[in-house]
Length: 135
Ligand code: THU
Image 1 (tube, rainbow, N blue to C red):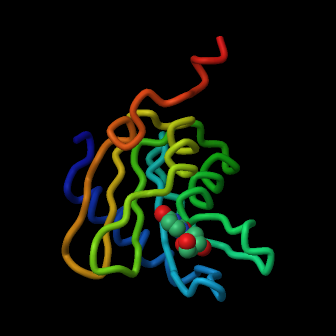
Image 2: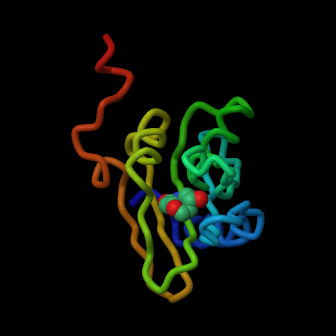
């Protein structure tokens, strides 16, 4: 799936490291994400919560927005690390945001164990609504 095993490992390691920056005092669920963007650069993010609970932003969206804010427009891959025994694929909102910039992106989900899930965004969000639907 369009990502060498060394790229996959590098991206997953960046996601795991990024979880250390999570601001998750309410859920205590510290998530990290890393985006491999069109330029080849890696951008990271972590979940950011708020005392107004509904305003939390997932790690994946933080990382995607970081990449876009730095001028990237294409996303080749996203890695997400959750502090769980099993890998956790991105929530629906994050799938939609990843779709905007990487409808074929590879999504790599890692966790505390050695288990991982690797899927493409279009597998996780089939028949997605995207920019083409506005034409
Ligand atoms: N969260 C993420 O950052 N990514 C996910 O894929 C699922 C959930 C965050 C949001 C919230 O801060 C906490 O995890 C609990 O839902």
